[in-house]
Length: 335
Picture (cartoon, rainbow, N blue to C red):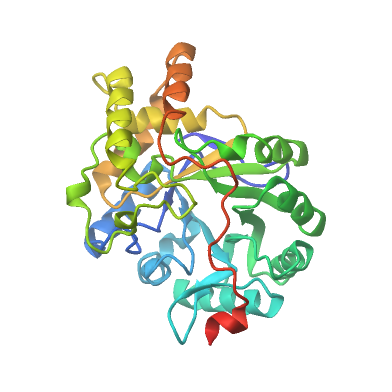
């Protein structure tokens, strides 16, 4: 495993981590026994940045049941500011200080631990000033509920505000060959501020495996709706055949014995110097091992440039930074 530092003042973490959104059920039911094997193999291979959230289905409970003595081997990350409403079950955006505290305490109960290594605000809350939310996040750090703090899906301007209120070590954003929006303003700002980027969804939610078959998607798989939860429409029926074909074109460019499109796509993300770690959502041991194999891939400049060029031809791209779609106030959402 390769290791990189989370920003100027953060810890050293694995270059590839394990995300728990898919294990929590985002793509349909996951096999718990296989998920446990995947977690164990991730620890063996050093992919010990485990990334979860209250919004990731049952993943925090699974981690709580599974980790036990292995907790100390894991750099455990969870999030706050987006959590299921206890009455309706809908995900609600709420970064009010009292809500953040309650959400984190609930997460720690599910995780069966006293603290986490990294706590992120999941999405910016338009109803709570950034400084207020980030300040509350830092107070949770000061009280010992987390060692480090960061944010997720924050724009360049929002990141700058957060850094003034808390010792932010990273901004976690969706970043892959089909989504390069964050490069324009946020990446340079993060570099200026000494904040690392943690990249999630490096495979464009499966499109960049080159093997995804829409007919095989489970009925509970959110991709059947067409969007990517980040305002892009990569899976919309009008765009999907083109994007499938584009992924196959990329595969033809990079695939060779011992190297898959999956690995090349992750290696492309890791080549960006501002990216400290890539979160991959492996649900099976074989997929985890393939993803970690990206660390051994060396793309030459010409191949990397051609992948970048092809990525710009994807259909359903958006130029604006994504925002969480629920814009009503917490009290209105809960009613």
